[in-house]
Amino acid sequence: MNSVELRYDRTVEEIESIYTLALPELIFQAQTAHRAYHRAEEVQGCKLLSIKTGGCPEDCAYCPQSAHYKTGVAREALMAVEETLDAARRAKEEGATRFCMGAAWRDVPQGEEFLRVLEMVRGVRALGLEACCTLGMLNDDQAEALSEAGLTAYNHNLDTSPEFYGEIITTRAYRERLDTLARVRRAGITVCCGGIIGMGESRRDRIRLLQQLASQRPHPESVPVNMLVRVAGTPLADESSVDPIEMVRMIATARVLMPASMVRLSAGRLSMTDEAQALCFLAGANSIFIGDRLLTTPNPDQHHDRSLLDKLGMRLMTDDK
Image 1 (cartoon, rainbow, N blue to C red):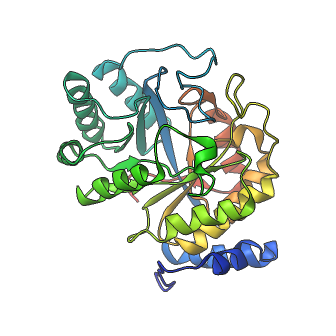
Image 2: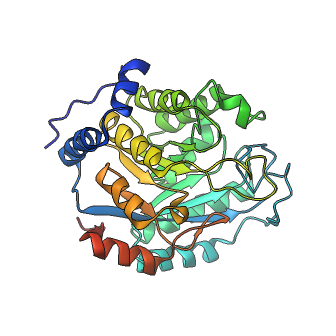
């Protein structure tokens, strides 16, 4: 166990040589890396809840919660603590060991709303679940407060390469995302950071995204890999679909580059066949989001996921492993 080397200095050319391997060889390398740190037959079940929906001032071209677009997503206030904890209890009953809370903010607000989020975090942890938040940019004091409340992880995705980023988002700089990740790390919270494919980016952009992730020291403990979910009203609503094999390559390369990380097969699973998802597991994905909603977009229901894992002879991780 743990004999696979952790590296932080991969070049674009080196990553490209991995990404473009013949698929059997790529999956073999990914499996070798995966088995050095993880159990091959297990995936973690996570549940993602939108605790504050819509009206976000950011202009992320993929996001139905942006106030810039007409997508039919209604603006909703921050949820009550007990309502959130009820959802966390249900998630645990469904097999989740990680509960993620997302709020459509650009910056984490000060005052009562932030205090309410801290209470949610404490409550989720008291249930015996890992707690993850994605709330936008935060300052050092807020990161420290989240850490003291027991937050397990903070999600802040890079989304794409530095070069393509401006084609997708103009209201926040790439550097601001990296600065937020640094604040999270300094506060002692684990980092959840990944990206999205299928937004019109090139393969080189995907490789550059992987390089950005794999050059972080330490690597993000959690790496969500998302496939664009096209939503009417967003600028990317008519974007061409991505070949699922690209998703497999993305996950396999992430696993080779970041063997100790949890690589999460995240958004876009509803458009993937069972066979494509099985290939992603073979490529080293060891986490899925369970439940029929991912923030505001659809996701396979728990019965389908249980059936898929049963067919594959796999199982959800338990918190006593």
